[in-house]
Length: 264
Image (tube, rainbow, N blue to C red; front, side, top):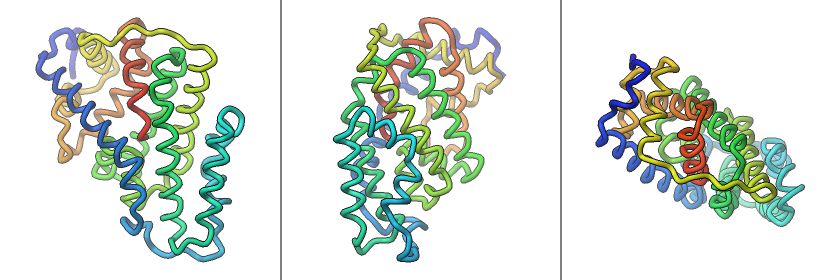
C-alpha cells in the first residue's frame, strides 16, 4: 500500500505517462462510440431476437432517465433519437444491432456538448466521475477484467461489441443521464474552473493511497496496457477517489476530465 504522502513522491515520468494514456484511450473511446458501433454483427449480441421485440419500446425503457432529460432540455435531440428508433423498426437487423446503432447516435449527441462540461458546477463533476467509477467496478465484477479493460479504453461501445450491453443497461442510462444533467447545469449555472496542473495527478494518486488502493494501481494507470488485468480496477479506483477528493486539485482534475467522458 502507498502511504499518505506517496502522491508527492510519484515519478514525473509515470504521471506524464498516465496523462498520455488517457489522452489516447479517451480519443479511441470517442471514435469507437461514434463510428464502430454502426457496424452490426459483432459480438454475442448478434444472435437473432424474436420479431415481437419493439426497438422503440426497448430503447425508451432502457434509456428512460436520459430521454427524460433530453425531452425536457434538448427536445430536438430527443425527437431525433426517437425518429431513428422508428426508422429502425423494420430494418433487417437484430434488436441488439438496432440498439447498438441508437447508442452510436446517443454518443454523437453527447460529443456535441462535451466542451460545455468544462463549465459544469463542481457537484455535477463529482457525480459524473463517481458514477463512472462505480460503473467500471460493476463491469469488472460481472463481466471480468478483459471486458472491463476494453470498456475502460474504448468506452461503452465495447460492451456492445462484447455482447454484454444488455446486462448493464441501467448503468449505461445512469451514466448518460448524469452526463446530460451536467450539460444542463453547465448551460444554466456555468462555473469557471482553473486549468489542471501536473501536480493534481500526484494529488489524486495520493488520495488513492489514502483510500487504501495499492501502488500497483498507479503503475497500471501509467502503463495503460490492454493486457493488464488490473487496469480497469485501477481506473475505477482512480475515478471513485477523485470524485470524493476535497480541495482545488480535485476540482481541477474533475473539470479537466469531464469533457473526455462522452464515450462512456
